[in-house]
Length: 175
Image (cartoon, rainbow, N blue to C red; front, side):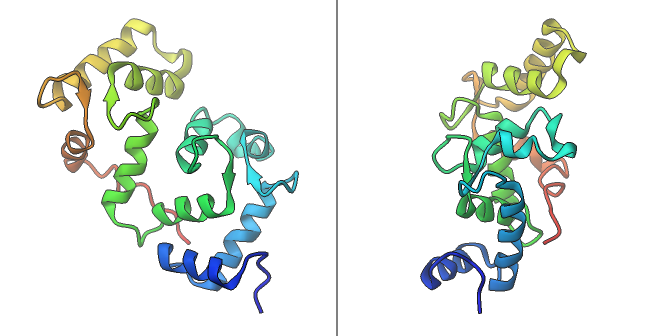
């Protein structure tokens, strides 16, 4: 008998959309519940800050924003399972790349602008680089990735850039 506080149809829907078995979903729920210290049914930055290994990770807020289906940076269990599914070894590389692309697309308009990339890099490197150094990296990236020179990196351009790396393959969590 399932210990999950969801209907059978909700569990079946999760199984269909993620390919996780019910026992795997139950294990994920236990992990989710461990994060949800306030028992609100959602994980937010405050919940994640309770995990010492994650408290200083500058990308946690971006990850939560991408995981959240409504962009609120609060992740319910269904969003959590879908995000973990994307990071599982069974998920196609394209899904992993789309997740990563969204990490860079800060304004959520479906393309990475100079400002999006600069802000993402600033979050990642903090004070380790000057603004000028960051802008140089952004400019170099746009020279390499923005094939149609429209000032944006589309998912297709991002995919081409990622094809020459193992970057989507690194996004694997053992489940």
